[in-house]
Amino acid sequence: MISRISRHKYVPAPSHEWLMLATIFLLMLLNFLQTGMIVFAAAPLMGELGVSPQEYSLATASYACVAVVTISKQRWLVERMGWKLYILGSLFIFFIGCVVGFYCRSFDGFLIGYVIMGFGGAAFMTGARVIINLFPPSLIRLTGIKAYAYGLTIGSALAPFLAAHLFMTASWHYLFVILMVVSLLSAITAAFCLPGIPAKEEMRSQSHPYILMALAAGSFLVLYGFQHGNYAFFSNTVLVCVFLLLGLSSLYYFLRSMVRHHENRPLLSMKSLFSSKLYRNGVTVFFVCYLIMGSNSYLIPQIMQKGLGYGWSTIGNWYALGQVAGVVGLFVNMLIMPKKPHGKKFYVAGFVCLMAYGFLMMKLTPTTNLQTYVVPALFLFVFFTVCVQGTVAAKAFAELQHDETVFSHAQQVKNMVSQISVALGISLASIGLQWRTTVHYGVLNQHVATNDSIFVRTLSQISNVYSAHMSSDMATKAGFAWIADQVHRNAVILAGIDYFSLLFVAGIIGVIVMGCQKRLN
Figure 1: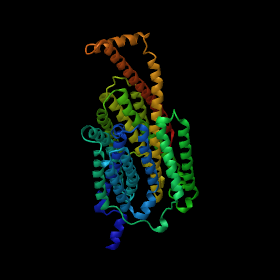
Figure 2: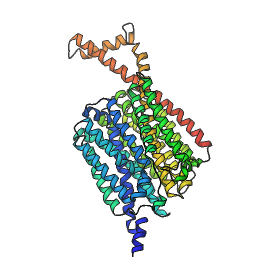
Figure 3: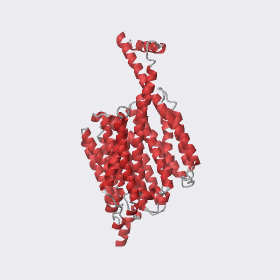
């Protein structure tokens, strides 16, 4: 009896398999709900908290920094606490952060709560994926991967919808209530199924405070440099470059230390990981995909709101509908891959979708319909992420499955790269949007002059419409304000078209590269 109980603490008992699957699903759902809601609601949150984008960037950089450092320590903590205490402790910390966020009434309170959430929430994605390997190699492990993937796609689809409706009908504080409820459900299922025995002492990885401090400092400086670069890149380029240089130097020191001390069971087995060419290629593809996802997630709401003129709640509803395509794409992917596992067709199909998405969005006009044009295009983008990222996730870790510790380290490094890649994508998109909008605005603004016949005729027509409700002078001013607004909207749309043209080219390159490569198949 004792040996049976002990064994079930390492490997889930058959009666607990559904609880394990529920835990995996809920952890992923929780991770992408909190990420999606907080990121999507950034603009209205800044208004509610009364802070500038520069101040808000400190919160996002702090969260990402905490997440990177916590992810790096995950295996180290699991080896000393066991999976049950680690996940329950992470959920408890995350819950406390949500409570602080719910009761906060200022940016300082929000920042403290968000950082606390980062300490707990960083465990969810990597933890959920590694927990799947607690199942013995069988069909149940494949079911665990499905639960993981559906938690990701459903969470991504629900997040913008919930955020938009909570801001319109209730209060932004209730974002944290939803997260608290899901975290409680996750804790209940985890408490009854996760193994509780830590690893033997001689099997534990080692960590050094100076090395960890280098990772923390490097992550914060790089991420804050990217975020600060959104607003100060053109006005204070030197400061931004200093941030990035110091951050990259610290990260280099961390990586060099991991490689040099690989024989002493380091915090992350970098040398073992990157000796696998398959894994190196996979992480590169992940980096590119997360870079594109970060830039797209930032630009789409901006273009739809500032360019096409849609309200924030409308954007939330239809953007969420576009994300639903991920669930459909995942179902099709899961249906085909077991029968035809060769990866090339999925990679090529994914980048064809990216190419088609870029081509369609290059045709944007101020009168483009959101429901019939933009949402179908978003379906293609989501299919790209499912086809490429889902396939590389299934292929890139194949050579590392034999060692649970190395596999866990591989997942940790991949998710650390994703944090930095998404931040880089958002920053480059923000800088690019400022740059291209300014360029196009300058060109368009040249035509707002009294010697331009089209401007004079348009101003006269608009002023005549307004003159029915106000004086002639006020009508002229209102007409000029309308034209100025149209110039700015068109400048934003043209900047977006530049970005989508870049995605179109990236799709073509991706199709060629993935069609020729053999390693990731």
